[in-house]
Length: 103
Image 1 (tube, rainbow, N blue to C red):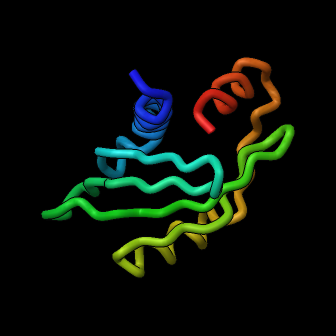
Image 2: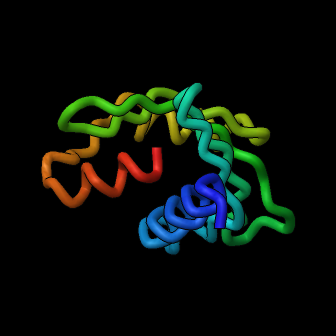
């Protein structure tokens, strides 16, 4: 299995743990060189899936969500309001190892 496919599968599995109340992450494409991830998500109550782009940055002790873009403007605005700039602690050795593999 190519590294890109492993990254995408790992990111999808990780994100779906936190996303299940809102829907399902169907597809993830991680672009480590540009610090961007593109996701196809199926939101609960929506007829069709939609694309979501996330700009991120990885710091020594945190994963930081920089900005969201979505084809549904209100979804991007809501995500930026509540998660834009949010830092997720990655100080544990295990978490850093996983992120290094994924990103």
